[in-house]
Image 1 (spheres, rainbow, N blue to C red):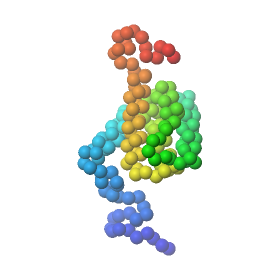
Image 2: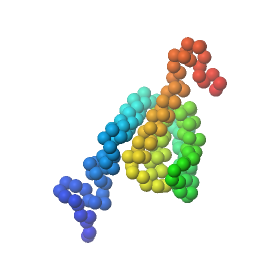
Image 3: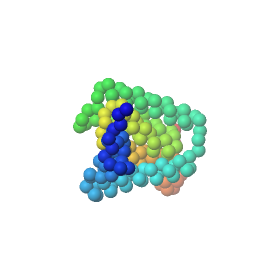
Image 4: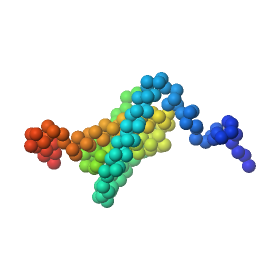
Length: 167
């Protein structure tokens, strides 16, 4: 039997998951690192709050699964074409914006994380902190939009009209 050498006592093998202190995020300049970690933590906190207020509905879960499947197909098509460097034409919003509009906030917060995890796995490897940060930033934007959609602010209630009157 061949075992991978470990780099010292209590450490994982070289081919195993890297130790936390070896993550690439720690090599960022301190202010940038703080910003990246702040955005990720904010997204996790928002997802936790949304999960606490979440009410399960089979119909909503089915809609989410259908939109997620369409997004997965888009990721697979991107895999075949390759992920271009530089300017990226983002077509994922076609499947993610209906989640923001039609489903509770929790779904809007987690949709980008699932899509970017699939992109990391199937299309192109990038430093994980970049994908996690991107998922968190997009998730916060979608969550904010979803909250604005489902819980209109004082301007809508003062005017006596709903922001969804056209639906």
